[in-house]
Amino acid sequence: MSARILTFSSQGDTTILEYDPATADMDEVNRVIAEYEAKTGAQPFDVATGERIEKVTRAQNEVLMVHPIAGG
Amino acid sequence: MTSAIVSALVLTLLLGVIALLRWEFAYFALRRTGMQRLADEARPYFWYANGPRGLPLFTDNSPRNGLGAARITREQRAEAFLRRILKLTGAKKVDGAYVLNVGKVQFQLRDRFIRRMLNPKDPESAYEETCFYLVHNGMPKVEEIATALLHLSNNPALFDKWAVQNGVAFKADGKVFDRCPLIGLR
Image (tube, rainbow over all chains, first blue to last red):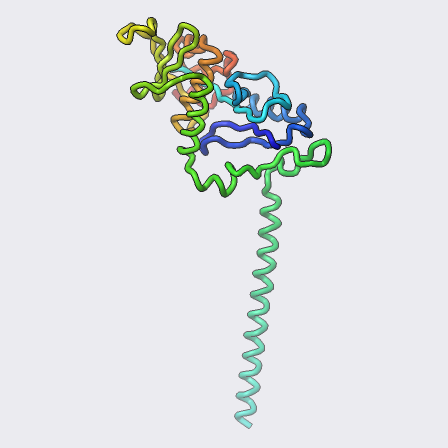
């Protein structure tokens, strides 16, 4: 079984990374997510619950990086 | 004597053509090998990263990214994703607007506009309105709506920030994203 980190983009939903949650180094997964957030402002949401999450754990199989919004 | 010379010339010509063809085939095979190596080198970093047990940690072989992606358009995928987000947030599409209830507050989202109804039970009630846009341009419209639905269902107070701080991008946790690529362009 694999887990995915995805995001919306000009290509539609796009998988940023995919890993085996049973064996993956979750610190590494979270490091990649933190780098992505620093670059784009996107933050992780659990697609199973629709809630924002601080850190991705092995329990999440699908995480959506949600981009910032501006008003205007 | 003449025929012998002609025969020798034809033979030489034939040998030359054969040598040329062999060189062409060898060059083509070399190019193919080189291109394959270049394609291998172009694979993303994640392809090579390994997990603790030597299993691939990151791969990019998802059917959504590969040939499978060609079967359905990005708009169809975006629509499908929006349906998932509607189910998650409990939002519904009514008269072209996506209606999201968060506690006693009701938001109505349309393309780039969000209304906050002051009295959701009265369709004629007054409302507040703000525009919104994604700081990273180009995603399908329905994914912009899905993004706004997720933001508001988790943090309805973001509406006030969008309405008041024109052009400032906010992350889902309400913090300002100060590396917004569109700041200064609007």
